[in-house]
Length: 67
Image (cartoon, rainbow, N blue to C red; front, side, top):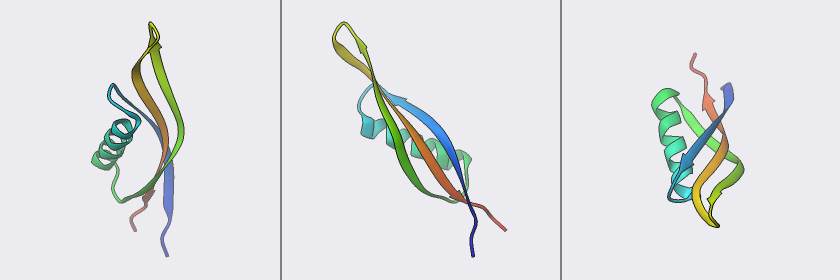
């Protein structure tokens, strides 16, 4: 039997949504042990002068609690 916890994080990138997701997962894995999955809850872009300047994702990160 295992018990997991879910926490919400936000990650940004100037490159792409994929990059924001990768950076968020990497950072969560540096801080949390046993990260087992993520659900991308929201995606947003920042716009200046008609051009996209940033990508942001809100994710729910799942990690398994240790005994």
